Image (cartoon, rainbow over all chains, first blue to last red; front, side, top):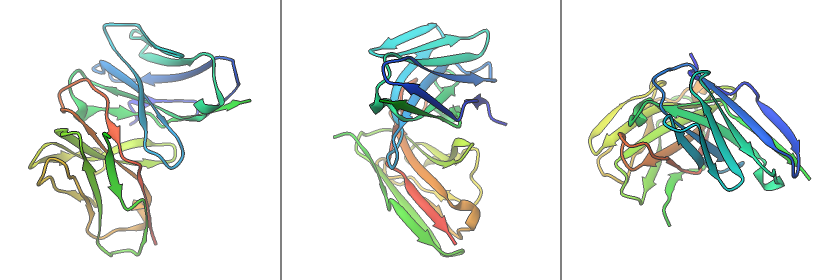
Length: 113
Length: 114
């Protein structure tokens, strides 16, 4: 039973446009959410996070939005660059409990020049 | 440089031949964990360790063992590997199990069991 779902296995966008990656979760105990980026032959690296007390967090070109009532979060990349091409994983955990962190299946983003 | 180091990066082995994948971190992190990544399933936790000598099962522990004798090392042991353990494995560490903080991942070990 996947508690974190990324329903789009892949996404392709043009350079300079916006990329929107979506993530849904089912466990109402989840309180802390993260996005990781993974390049081929490398481990995932942390990108951005958000806790449930906020509905938006920005870091440069990356913004994460959280809709708790819908149990949905999204990652916006604006403007998209070819170097953003990677697999993006969404992760969620209950408050202060990494033991119960769960990951989505990932979305492969391709940014075309 | 802060890092998590896994070895080997690639491994092909035969069914039943015991193997160990090593993991070491240099950040003095208390919390370490092992994941496997399979297509369509994302990262699934195998085992985790909240501190030295404290380990517990994750979601998919069958066929695996771990140990945490030192804070920096967290090896993954497959006593009798089977083909369904063919996967991409990641070790990760974070400061503490009870903090909302990001994890640092190793570069991965691609294991093939024939």
